Length: 521
Image (cartoon, rainbow, N blue to C red):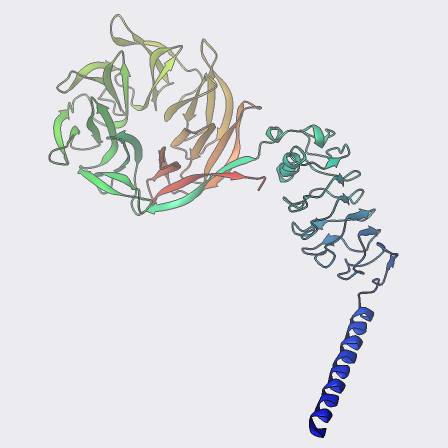
């Protein structure tokens, strides 16, 4: 009986010892609670820090109000307050802050009042108030906030938050300087910019590029003068690249011009030697078949081809750059193409552009020997009549047109001298802008959605991309592209993506993707 009694008394002793140890540990934990950091003054539930060099990471657990005044730090790093999750009020006053991390206030789910007043702030990171759903007041007065795209998110947040803000003003940029941020709207910011980014390199030289739609698919065709082919590409929806579709063998090819008539695909192939020809896509044989030759006595040295439709009838015109030939209009008669009209003989035409001026069909021919000549369609005669020329613009290599808000403009390319943009004023073309263009053989306007560009290529310098500025009514520099001896540009849209195709006479043909970049992100 004595042995069990002694065991019980020993167990009681152990229990008492464990309880004593737990009491000591508990008291120890209580005694090791965070004390008020050096440089700060703490009361029951408040802490004030002045002239501290960084944000302290530990405060007494009952602190719910924290203030920083005239601190010696200029950055609030991420997760600075994760150890004080119960804060309800946080103030930074009369500091000089250069950077606030987007996660600086992470974990402050109970914060109700935040003051960043008079801290020389120029911007705030996007979503810096994320997760702070208890906020009722934010004070941003006395800063130098620049209301640019980086601060667009704040305007959006102001319009959606339940927290109130005092009136704060923009210190810049000029468009918003002096305005109240509270009065701005998200659409007050134009934050979408664009660029052409290199996407695919094609290992061949080319002198022209054309894009077209056939059978609900998008295609591209390059004229390759050295290989002597028309090289057709199609978009691979799986691999997301352009791949070879077919070729037309030719010699000294300068233009491969596609033309779709009644769901039939024709290709006019212009050659410097051996004459020019017309091919048709044979769907049953799945290949191109030559159906017609072009009169070599009329077209001796083709340089450009334009296709167009007038009153439901299909035409194409070839600009002839020889002194013995003549720029000629051809018409489709249901079976083939026949010569419809000869224009501008003996003038070495280098380019032809079809466009409508005041809703009437016109052609503009550029020539190496005289000013560009404008022809107007005579509906009764069903032919083009010479109308006028463009003064003071000798030696224009090519002319391409574009429209902005219904107004008609043309880009005139000059190899020597300045290339120009001109606007139709209702009676004549008048100069809008000039561009230094030594060595230029292409000044191509291209449109992508709401954006209008003009791309100026040169044999001696980088290709310059200009973007139309609606407020100035002019093009402004946008980007430079490295393309050797560019000769033509074209845009194709496929799978909700837009690509710029750039032919190169002395280097690799290149494909760029048109990207939209949101500067507010």
